[in-house]
Image (cartoon, rainbow over all chains, first blue to last red; front, side, top):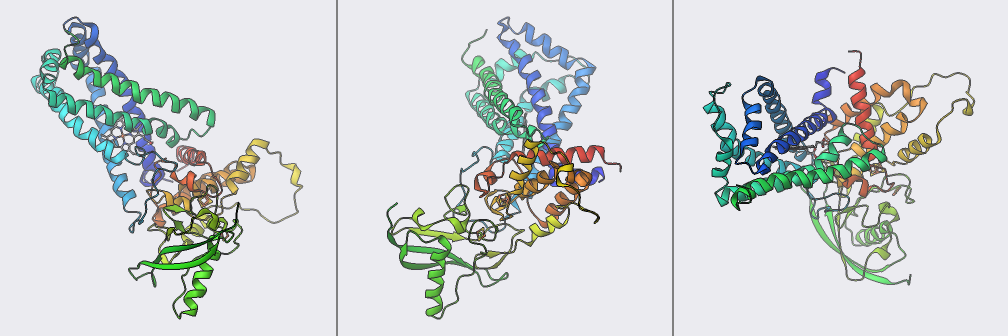
Length: 223
Length: 254
Ligand code: HEM
Ligand code: SF4
Ligand code: FES
């Protein structure tokens, strides 16, 4: 039972999805918490301080490498699993099984993930790339991220794409959150009930908060 | 319920052998009693086909009382038909109305190739069991059955998992054609009992390896399998299998 055998098995691949998925959930908590500082209504002062701590300090910058590694692992393993699983039914049914026992979003994790990925590319191009290239990808001087946000979110098309990305994230998590704990082996009903409840709340609240950010800028709810 | 007779159109998958491409063929059956089982209705059709000098439709069945797991028809988009917690052989014609069209397909999964018409080869399940779905017992004096205390809840859960009849409806329903519900029922059944403990690590590891080798997909916890299962095997067993696998991989010596 070598590690290679473990992580190339179907259960092992799922374990990778579960671990990286929970890791990304933890990242979302940090990200949404920090970004919520835009609602301090202080012209972005508090938000920029937080962003500065994350951008101009070696500790979060090293953690950032871990974040990208985890994200890449999740994306690559996820897409490989989608194709792996698709190849397992070569001849399809004339009539599909439909929704009995499962929700459409639990069967569409690859599609939802791909939408999130496309959103992420735009998102990184909007904020991460301009800032890091300005910093020379080291600890150089940052751009004013608050005014960048204001600028980016003055475009209605961008706002729509962001909201759509957040909705996809919500559905991805509506299945993914509780599924990840099943993947890691939580089988007791009492635990699963609470995890499902927390997962549902998380997958509504966090994407909603994220979606409120571009909307707040676009509609001028903050100054 | 009032007895009634019905005329039906059947759209049945016909395929000569593994290599044949196969396709749907329409049949009419008349005066089918609502008291008949689904398989009896197919028997009527087959007798009609034999009388007309045609090849009867091949389908799997054995006990016809819901316990062996041989029957395996995908009826109107549902493995074992529309009734919950039910096998094809226990589906009765009162589930249908006069004039209805019923579409009958075989289980679809790469690991379950069609042998003929509606019969698929499910020997992959046998090989998964052979890979670890057993306990090894050296012969000797018979031990007193009550000498090994077993927690009642664990015994009940093990029994519920042991209810699996290996029909493959879970695979047929799963969008990934994954055999995880079947596998997890077998692993859980033995993992919950002290007799299964000595081999628990090698069991889960070898059975998962065999499942992958047979060409089943990976589980994504959608829940379709549980809803299709005639024995209502709980999807919680899959989480238990994951736990067994994770623990086995962390604590393995090599
Ligand atoms: C911040 C973003 C993301 C978060 C928080 C997240 C979270 C999760 C979680 C918790 C799971 C459940 C794991 C399990 O069932 O064990 C999951 C599964 C999955 N994710 Fe993501 N994910 C994100 C982005 C992505 C992206 C960009 C893709 C790109 C393709 C993706 C594709 C998948 C796939 C294919 C699965 C497997 C579905 C399944 O097994 O049911 N995810 N994700
Ligand atoms: S788990 Fe249920 S559906 Fe799957 S093989 Fe066993 S009895 Fe059939
Ligand atoms: S024929 Fe035995 S379970 Fe249906």
